[in-house]
Length: 276
Image (tube, rainbow, N blue to C red; front, side, top):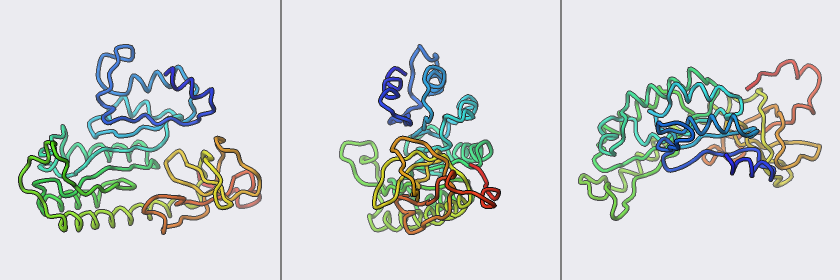
């Protein structure tokens, strides 16, 4: 909390609460149970931070209290989920404390409570012992669950790790093929989500100017290229009317959306606005 207040004096507008496993965070000052909820509550109470972003949540950490806290408009409408698989046997082999049912429940709950949220996920493909049927179990489940983008990580050997000692290693070629299939699903979903943003108004944090345009980040984690005739300042937050989506950049999500500051628009076009 003290660190955030210090950053605010330096002009910082957004902080990402991140860690290897933020669900294990515990501080008796903020509650006796492990989890980030107490810290989040104190940040909201004791700082004027306008944008707080959460990262690396596991399905079982999408609790009632977390959902309640995320109703606060200062928490960005963006959930980054560390899921790794959507198949129970694979998750058990990974020693995860949840299964496919918890993955499905958490994603559906986020979609129900925050229908406009950007939901990104980390996934590992080709973990030792993952068969083609296990991969397809994950793939099929993901095809109907609500999410926005998957960060796909092909499994790779790390000497000295638990996974490295497991048998039934997958061939690199097979791992690569699975990664491509999941990446293709992610690109398709992300592109459709991007097209759905056109016509919406978003609060965008201006980051920098590059190649004659301003680059920013929306609260729901869409990179936005801002076309503005007036000068903008890095660190200011402005409302932007989204006018297009560049699907060619969706792989790395750089400048996926482009739009114009809302205060530069006038007339009938203003009446057609939708908000997010």
